[in-house]
Amino acid sequence: QKEVEQNSGPLSVPEGAIASLNCTYSDRGSQSFFWYRQYSGKSPELIMFIYSNGDKEDGRFTAQLNKASQYVSLLIRDSQPSDSATYLCAVFLNSGYALNFGKGTSLLVTP
Amino acid sequence: GAVVSQHPSRVICKSGTSVKIECRSLDFQATTMFWYRQFPKKSLMLMATSNEGSKATYEQGVEKDKFLINHASLTLSTLTVTSAHPEDSSFYICSAWGQGNQPQHFGDGTRLSIL
Image (tube, rainbow over all chains, first blue to last red; front, side, top):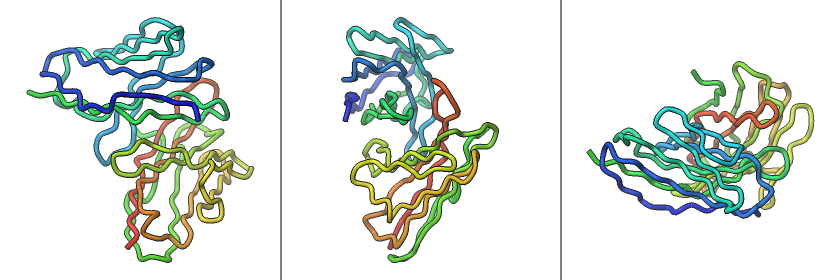
């Protein structure tokens, strides 16, 4: 099984700060990367996806991909308490476009 | 609004009962639907991949006779947990995928509790 690794946290940041979430993956052939947010007891909600090296910005969220280093990150600017959740990094599995999830990083934004 | 509807959201039943969970894609044709399971404080684990009109592909360690999957149309897949036992208690989540590199859309999940 190809691995997707995340620091489980919890990562605690003050309100208004930048939260930086990191993810590494083992399959060098991976092409598509996803960040999902999951609140406790709820199903994952897509935040962003990225396919190309570099940065992709959407509102307060920026995804960064470095395929050479097999590293993908998510930056959350102006963090809000409502951003407190578990953030899941996911990569397409080789076959059939199923997702291989990391274990998630728990983010806590303190007022 | 939700693009994938999953029903029911919560089930509590006795050991030995069979439980059916429905997953519908609401505004697109889902070439493939996926079923995941998540235990407390764990990540989502893929159980099976379901393609319309064909048999589901199960991940290693998932019993296909216990977790019956039917994908009769491009908008509906069902997961039936047969003769459920307490160890089957978990959060079951479906997702639907249309084509290409488009991301999957998840249902709201079904929390299954077997007494």
